[in-house]
Image (tube, rainbow, N blue to C red; front, side):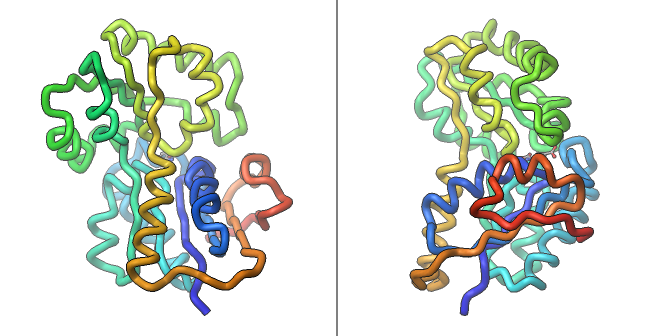
Length: 259
Ligand code: DGL
């Protein structure tokens, strides 16, 4: 029997990717690690992010995962090259969706909200250079957002105020697209829709990651074809309340584990 799809994030944000993955791959088992005890990754050094990514990867591999989805922009942009060269399984990463945004912007001005760790990475800079020629990118670090989402806040006043502070300078710069460069941020879409004018498109990479996961599993002959109820296991090394709230306990098995 083939193993589950392994997924990790600094915390609960990668569940936004997990939801896209199970929609696209409904027969697959999944094993998700929320490294919430170490969240946020975004303010850590590249070295620290790499060490945490290796720890998560080794746990997932020791649990028999056949593929690993790094459901964290910060971990992908700082660690995926290393992971791909050191481990044999396929890795799927996520990075801010600069290319689709650059293809569809009319004002040629795109906002990117992401963590410090992502915005300062060379992978992010290289992608921007490659795909956003002639486009102005207005970057903003989403300081404090991950911490609030980790505690289950997705519509508090504090969150709204922080978002207004981060988004207003972008609006002044006449962006018409906002790239969500952190897997926690799709949970902010309802509140962002209230803040943003209707003409501004919100772009995130969740669906593209699920498509890519499907494509690689198919190419490698790793797709599950067994028609039975899949098993979804979640571990968090911190309080599991938010994780349970976001994934629901009806279809997932969520528990605390000091991994
Ligand atoms: N979900 C992570 C990401 O996509 C959050 C990073 C953090 O923990 O700061 O970047």
